[in-house]
Image (cartoon, rainbow, N blue to C red; front, side, top):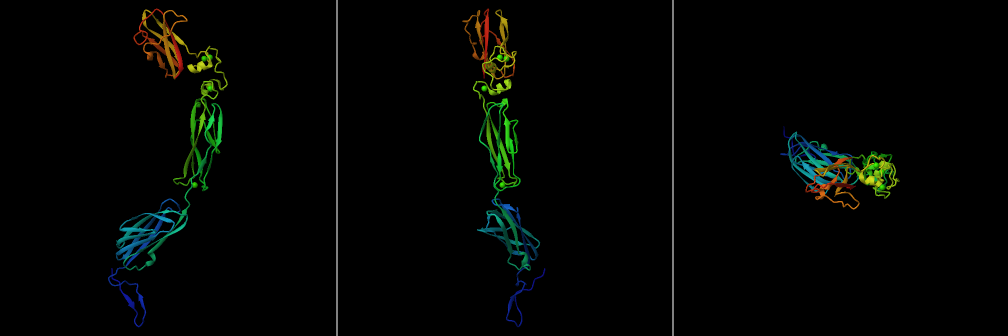
Length: 383
Ligand SMILES: [Ca+2]
Ligand SMILES: [Ca+2]
Ligand SMILES: [Ca+2]
Ligand SMILES: [Ca+2]
């Protein structure tokens, strides 16, 4: 490296003074250069924008007191600043970065984060200077232009209020979705729904199957405007309620629909002629269209000379059964007694449609004796 000539030169014979490009004695020369880029561009108002500023020193000397100045555009609000060296000061829209020395061939970086607050096209100007001379001040300034887009507006999903439905019946309703920005990627999907529902051309439809009697079904729609913004995706929902007993006959509508395919069959009829009314078959869990499906005691075994009398009964799942007994010869006035430990004569069937065998061990928990005759009676009720 060689020292440059220096000083204020006065041309001989002329009363004019001018600054030479050469530095004064003791000063250094450094060709600093600055560049700035933005990301993302375009950027949404309300979403951070990053300015990446890079410095280089092409020499020939190290630069001292390097200062970067960024006067932020008026529609950008300062958020933060990070430097590879030195420190910064921010006053209102002016960010001043004191980077100290920058060696020949060295680089430095300044990262400024801003928040766009107004839409429009925005220019950010940055500059660098030092205490030395710069032979090429033309690259000491740089700018970048950013397009601030309006803040994204969320889609809006319109759904009707709760629908009430009867088993076997169909319902449908319109679901409309709009995007205030008219974003072209707008789409809506039905994410939560009861089995068998359909959603096409903004129309949601469903027929309530028997198993849905007495249920409330949430139906959820999700819209996405395709802009990838935090507010791009919205959710809305409604409910479809299926009545348990719409015809008020104390029978689950789903059970009626399953066995009769209608809700008009009388609860007090005996469709299969097995002497058990439809409502009794409902309570017992038996089939009202099958005479062989009947709640009854299937077998009773044991005698007064042997303990462990057994009673076998046909049972259905989720029904509560209670067995009682009467000792001695049967008559219309024979009282029915509970077993000594009540729980021993009560059970809830959980195994499906099957048979249950109750054992009267004639011990302390049951009847405590073995009389000559003993009758049993079993009742069933909804659990
Ligand atoms: Ca939008
Ligand atoms: Ca009913
Ligand atoms: Ca019947
Ligand atoms: Ca039956």
